[in-house]
Structure formats: C-alpha cells, structure tokens
Length: 393
Image 1: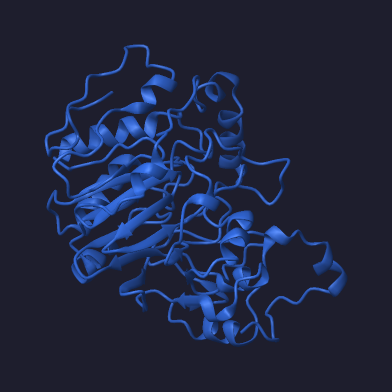
Image 2: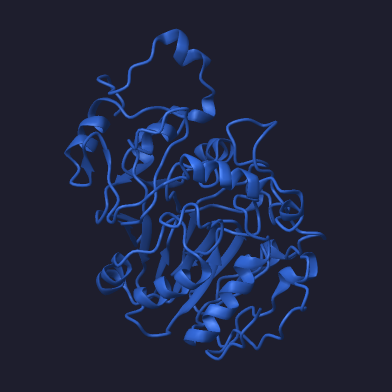
C-alpha cells in the first residue's frame, strides 16, 4: 500500500540515517487516499476547530523558564513509589461479570474487555516516549504487567502517532501476534515500516468504521496534531475512537482539546458505558490541543448527551512528565470537576481492573501517597463510585 509518489522524497542516504522510530512517510495509494480526504486541505490534515499546536516566539521562552525552574520541577514527579496494582494477571484471567472491564496500564494505555473481545488502546510499554533510548521523558512507574503475558488481543487501536501513544518496541512486539490494528489515516505507513502486514491494518478517516471480531470501531474527530520526525507536515491523522459491541459502548479520546464535536460524537455513537478521557499534560501554552480536568469532565458529559451517566476513566497522566503542571494535579482536578457536575469517575491504580457498570468502582485518590501534598493538605474525598463526589483541592 505504500508504493511510490511520496510528497516528501528523501535521498536513500538520508533515509538510511533516519532513526527507525521516526517511522515512514505516507506514499503511493495511501498518499492518494490522504489527498482525497475531506479533512485534508492546503497540504495537511485540518482540525475540526482551529488550534494552536505549540508555544511560539516569546511564549516559548516564557514557557521554557517556567518548565525548567527548579522548584517547579520538584512537583512534576512523584516523591514516592507510584502504587501499582499487583494482581492484574489473576484479575483478568476470568471474564468480567458485566461483560465490560477496563484496565488502565498508565498514561493512555487501556485494555478494554468488551462483550467477549479484547481491545488495547494506545499501548506504550517502552521506558521512554522518545525516538531515542537514552533521552526523552522516562516512565515514572513500571508497566503493571509484561506485554508478553498480557494474552491475546483482538484489536489494537492507535489514536495518533506521537511517541507517548505509538511506541516502536511495543508495536514490533505486537506485530508478531495475530492482532488487527485500527489506526487513523496515514498512520499505517509507520506500522507497515515496522513489520505489521498490510492485511492486518484497518486505516480510517474520521467517521469511517470497521468491523473486527464482532466489534464496530469508528474513528471520530479530535482536536490535536501529529508528527514523529524532524518535520511536522500533518500528513497523518489523529482521532478519538468509539467502540460498540453487542451489549456495550466505550469511547477513547486519544489526545484532544475541547471542541463542540463531542456532542455530535455522543449523539451518533453514544451514550457510552464508559469513556476514557485525556485530562493531563495540559498547559496555558497549548490550550487548544489538550484538555484540563474540567474540560475533560465537560467532554464526558457532552458525549453522554449532557447527562452524568456512565463512568469516566481519566487517562493521559501519571506515567510521563510532559507538562509544567504538578504530577498530582490532573487527578485532584478531575475529582473536583466531577464533584461539581455530579459525574461518576473511576480512579484505578495503574493495572487495577474494574467494571464500569458495577455498583462500586475504584474511588481512592491513590496518587496522594506518592505526591507532594499542597501546603493546606489534601481535602477529603467521598466515594467516586457514586454520583456524589466531594470536592478536592
């Protein structure tokens, strides 16, 4: 599917020097399909709503000063060991009683067991989210369970090609299995380059669907951007995902800024038994491409038709240091925002399986044992397994 006719040819010598982790550029039939996409214009994929993707000019200098300030750095990592759920393998050896179970592996990696099938979202088992093994953001806690013993997966779903969502060593390990990969348009070029056979790829534009093992997977819009190499030409798409089984429906946001399209996604594909929503790595310097906890709760409610139904799993936090906010802030902010809206949230430790439709779901603010407490101390939290949740500082 790669073929010839790349929009960005490189000499063979330069291509040989490029790290394998950079992946491959779309070409041939894949590139022609990208050019025909209604979401591709002026040489790049476009967001559903305009978005600034990074600090620029003076704001970049200001951001650097804040990011590297010594006292701020101390709060961006845990001060103790991050508690990991120790019995993941035993817990997932038996089917979920409700037919739906989620296991957050850290960051945006989630194993979803839905109606007898297994879906693995954004699997990152590498030590660093970087093209280099010696540099870049390093994991703040171990992976809860080795990938090799996780068991068979029916489909691997990728939201976009950033390093903290698309991990070369993880993909290469999964390429040797029989799993199918569902990816946004253009991302298949990376996977084929790393050894995934073309016949195991389902490459979708926004609002396109595919059927895998009795599940319907739909790539839905998101407000973000893409890129792995030295250039960022927006030639691979980013997406959120709706997955529907015979009995249950779930949603994974990938990375996204808040936008009105969540209401449309919910109306078309929801309501959802569970949503997995990005609430970390936000900053005032890139407000359009990552959501704050309050925006994440708002997105969850939009997806549910404005009603506090279903359970929300906060993702994209706790595992890598990717933004200037304190390490524990996304968790605390999510608890507070959920309390204000009466939303039901799940707070599992990494590796802790839970059933979103069960009466009780994980509710303890586990991160406090490993975080620097605010000067005023932690605020007591109520059981987040019920709609009423106490506010937290």
